[in-house]
Length: 386
Picture: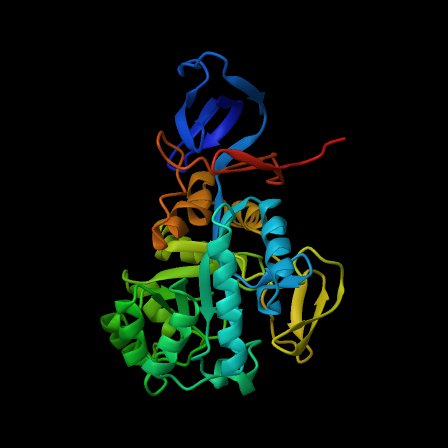
């Protein structure tokens, strides 16, 4: 069956198409172009989205939870609820994130979560971002210091096997003893190693890149500040083209002026928008928890009791809006950072609207609120405007 979204502004994300049409056939995009230039197949259902924005589905590489639930809950209801919550915000591809726990509990988390992902191939949970457990306690952020592990290849293999090979990204501190060997082993297994929660020097970063590191987790957060005589992660992240950087664009994890600087230095093609959302995402102000620690949500900012930032309550549609309004970035560049860039990292074949590509799309209003989410050609969320 053919159907088409007609009349909206399409962000491919390489260009804007005004008064455009996206024709969908089964699970794929069939044709994209101006309404006046495409050929609608016979019996094609037309859906009027005039005045709306059409983008590829969002790809979020770091999500701990949302809607009151966390992936570390170790139950299928939580997985389902988080998946549904993010579909209402346009995320059609998510890496479910777990954090450090005692070994027995973390292996159980990986086992149950990976089984759920495999058993639900139709869903938006497509893999795991293991944030830890090989992190530096000096810059642990909201991680529970008691649960951090010392790096070893044997322990990494335990994690990877428990995940059934679904760990796609792992955040690690390369300066720790044994970490370089873990980065190399993980890279051989196809896991993307992301530098984070780390005191690494520039020399450590250089060595980590040689061992396979390719990412930086939530740039500027849980790392040393920029220093002109003692270069560290930030210098490496900005200078080295081998590294893609993950950005939490909620306007307080990173100041808008610094986001603008990132766009100029690193360029939009090397920046990936993430949410780092925790269970408090989409919820009312109050008390929650993360890694057996109390988290307080106030004014959309989640912190531990000592004021340490504890993830975010962000969604990617809001991240796109934040960057555009606070930095003046082009919508094509900003959408790219939430779609194609992240899709390329995990080789999903998504993040772009063109014939033959997976029909994962989002329809947004002019304020970037999600009106419709389409995944594999199926409308999986539609805002009730009654």
